[in-house]
Length: 209
Ligand SMILES: N[C@@H](CCC(=O)N[C@@H](CS)C(=O)NCC(=O)O)C(=O)O
Image 1 (cartoon, protein in one colour):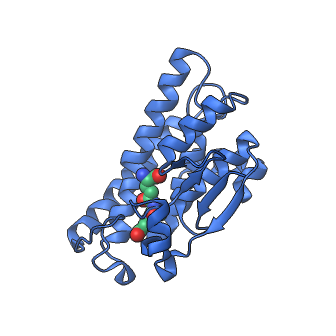
Image 2 (spheres, helix red, strand yellow; image 1 turned 90 degrees about the vertical axis):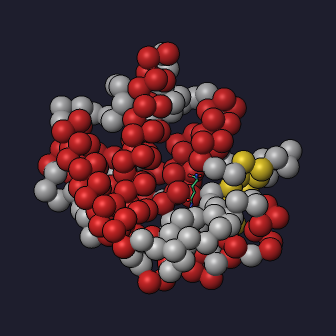
């Protein structure tokens, strides 16, 4: 049985959870409770020495320790439905949008949250090493996040999907970034094109996961 190491409240494992659901890949789930810092404990460290979620244990025992590996493996093993693009150009567009969303969306939220939340003192970055918070980075993250929302809103106008003409990883990443922005007080309410696209995405059962 394939095992997903997950935490239901965190955005990064949610990306893997939805990708696997869209592919129809059967698996069991083990919750690693980040509120109790279980991702830093010895048991989980033996599974993923990076101490981050998600991780995916394959049937042959291999462990994939980030979303990049999980999506690459899942697409290669279960090509249908394609979620990383069909043609070379579509693949390029999905990869490009996924990178933009990671750089300008997820990183901005992480900067804003991890550098301001008292519960994340000395945990300004995920992983095994501790880093002090830098309050200016929280402010910058919030500014970057607002710019990201404006950019995504302008891009999605007149489009059904974030990249190309089909549902893809770019939509999954964008939904999760937009949803998670709430933790730092940013919502898409004033961005009508994001709101309309998000409502269409909500019709997919995987987004209730
Ligand atoms: N590159 C990783 C990033 C994963 C990541 O940062 N996950 C967060 C949860 S959203 C985490 O594990 N944080 C652990 C911590 O804060 O100690 C991926 O997307 O797979």
